[in-house]
Amino acid sequence: MFKNKVYLSIGSNIGDKESNIASSIAMLGSYIEISNIKSSSFYNTEPLYNENQPSFLNIVLELETTLTPFQLLDKIHEIEKMLGREEKRLKNQPRTIDIDIIIFKNSFIDTPDLQIPHPGALFRKFVLIPLSELASDEIFPKTNIKIVDLLEKCPDTSVVKKYIIDKKA
Image (tube, rainbow, N blue to C red; front, top):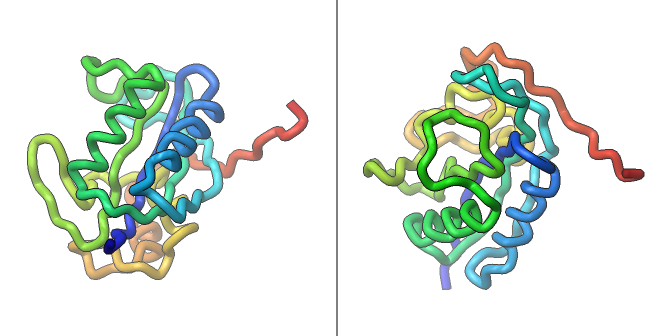
């Protein structure tokens, strides 16, 4: 069966952020339709839009899947719900976990429930920095521009710092 290369952005700013992200990766890896998961480094990031909330921990995952974009979205919603994300909440509020599909192979989708490539990715360093770690020379869909070049042009001025996980704790 044909596998699609996908990039997901994962963030958390409530509770044990490391554990929330690790749990989401483990849950994604438990699906037989998802394989070859690679993670960027973890990044500590300032919240955008609603700055009156805790900082985020963010990563980007590269993976392969035989799922369709909408099937993957359903799995993501299941994981978010299992990890305590509230279904009904205001946009840009604190959350235990937030998983977004950034790129799904060469798919272009524009529905109320799903937009691929993710329209906000080009304006968010917390997405572009870890994404460029995994795929700097890849062309971002619809732009004909390499991810590393998009990062250089990104208007986002927020602070995004590599996060060192304390293995002694």
